[in-house]
Length: 187
Image (cartoon, rainbow, N blue to C red; front, side, top):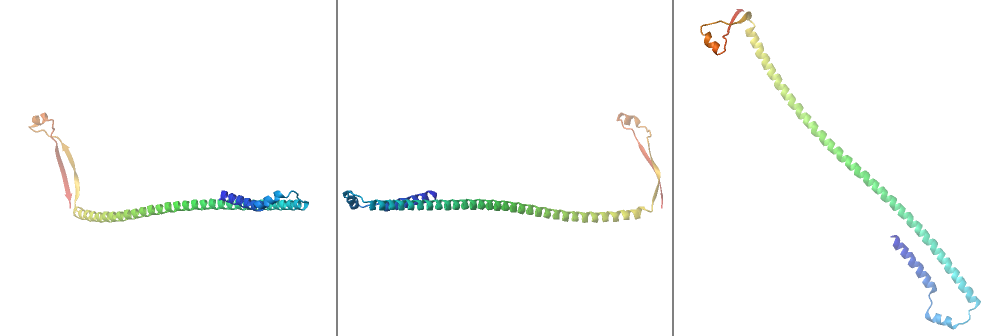
């Protein structure tokens, strides 16, 4: 954009200068034919030259103003681009945060579902254990009712006795043991 603007301004200045200094071939030949130049013509040329210099200065001022305006536009454009990049970065960061939050929510939901399933399984297992416990309590209660009438007293003794086959058993390294129990029941 900048080179185009400079080229346009350059062409404008050149065309203005050329239009003011352009002479036709006939005028040039007439001037060469005239040998004398009057003071009035010199004054007119000086005034024309002064006017051209004034126009040139005006054009320079306009060019400086255009440069200033162009620089301001470029600055504003750069600021707008920087703001746009910043907003885009913030939007991308917000998108990333939202995605992470969505993933966290999905993970939390999965864990909640798993905990719910575990709780249901634990309730089922607890109900089964309670049922078996009640059944065993009933069996133990029934067994206590039946065996509760009996009282066991006595002792159990283990002693060794020798018999006639002791020689054979000794070769096998087995010592005979006998158990005798004496039990008395009271109903």
